[in-house]
Structure formats: C-alpha cells, structure tokens
Image 1 (tube, helix red, strand yellow):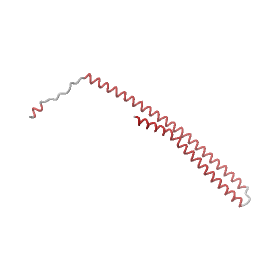
Image 2: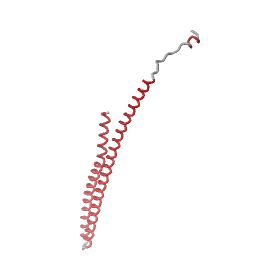
Image 3: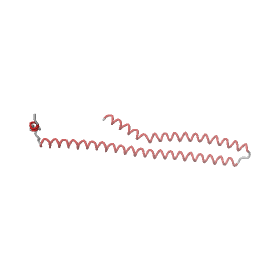
Image 4: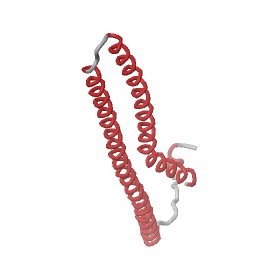
Length: 150
C-alpha cells in the first residue's frame, strides 16, 4: 500500500451524545460532592476528638503539676522543721559527746526522711506521667481500631 492509500482510511468514533455526557458529568459531580462531605465530616469529628484529648491532657497535666508542687513544698517544710528542731537541740548541748550523738541521730533521720521523700516523689511522678499520657493513649488506640476497620 502506498502512503496515499493509508492516509485515506478514516477512523470512526462512536457518536457523541451530549445529553448522556451531561447526565454522567452531573452524577460524577454529585458523587464527588457527597464524598467530600463525608470526608469533611470525618476530619471534623477527628479534630473535635483531638481537641478534647488535648484539653483533657492539659487539665490532667495541670492537676499533676499542682500535686507535685504541693508534695515538694511539704517535703521542704518537713526538712526545714527538722533542721530547726536540730538547731534548737544543738543549742542546749553541754558536751562534745552530746553534739556527736545529736548530729549522728540527725543525719540518720535526715537520710531516712530523704529516702522516703524520694520514694513519694517518684511514685507521684510516675502516677502523673501515666495520668497525663492516658487520654492520648486512649485516643491513639481508638484511632488505630478505626483505621484497622476502614
């Protein structure tokens, strides 16, 4: 075949029906709008949940910080009172052996009190960390369950 013979062949396309195209375009656009509304609703719900989690987390953190502050103040007060009591006892000392006995007893009691205060602070700090992380952990687990379902 020559070039002229192949050039004369025409390709036929199916007839274009504008009414069907308009209807298909409308259906596609409506479906897109509906999907967009659903996606927006999911994002909105997710953001509202996240806001609640943040508010809960910050409120818990505030409460935990207040509790830790109060424990610290109580420990400082107990230490100050013990120091003043020791100072008062030292004022009435009459011999070097009494000084050594009082000082040794004071150091032992101070160490025991420090260990007890450290245990209390550690327990309070651990509880505070768990309480602060709980809302976020719960929200994350919920999101992962929903993600696995989808």
